[in-house]
Length: 120
Image (tube, rainbow, N blue to C red; front, side, top):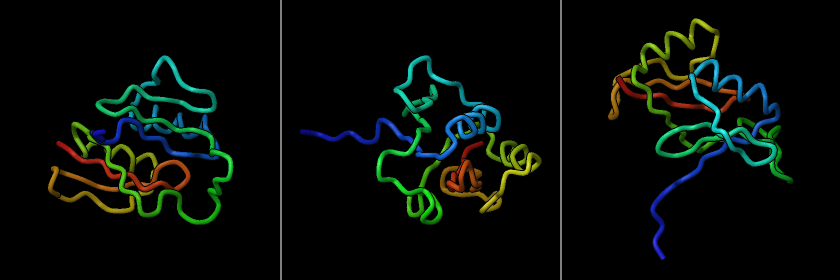
């Protein structure tokens, strides 16, 4: 048995359509043609990304969602993405800086998930 790494990532959210709209409108992601019930899957490479309704027993009201998990998105121009998100009023948690993978910054996505964008 060999594990080769993550091959699917999903965020659980209270408002599925609002979260999906955020990733489509603010980050430019495209919905994949197929998705399981109660989820929106995006055609991201190399790992598919999705937002989905919470699984039974998941309490999203107990603090900041995803605390302790690092979620990074590759971007062709992280600075331009930062400028666009900031202009749209998206909260910026960590301002742009040069890091090990190029220009990077962290913003708060739907329902408070911290997402780092890097590249460019």
